[in-house]
Length: 124
Image (cartoon, rainbow, N blue to C red; front, side, top):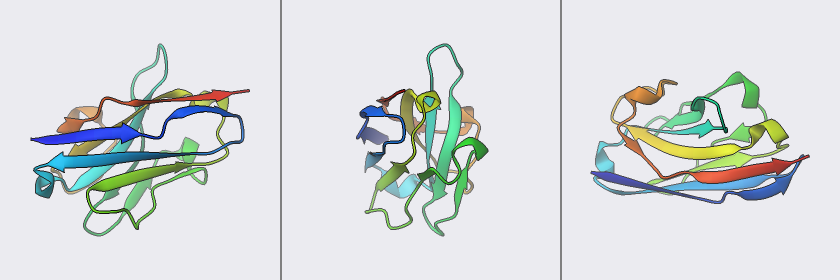
């Protein structure tokens, strides 16, 4: 089993920044890709960004490109999400997810492990 724990959420004004972190423990050798999803109130969970641990290939949803990034120099078994120029529509619970598959995919059902989530609230 793999356990994922997110941290770094909070309340920030529009235009501000937060750095989210996800720490993995347990059988981390089985993890190939790590990803961030988010879910706003009344909306479905959506893919935000992900990284393939071996080669460092990243993938982002179009709405966050240029504002939210996953640094390639993550510490072992950790993935961060640097969020800049935040907008009120970025308000959501942000979840870390991991899978044994080789490629970052945007389908939540294909992920094997999930964290509990961390709340990000952006005020206008």
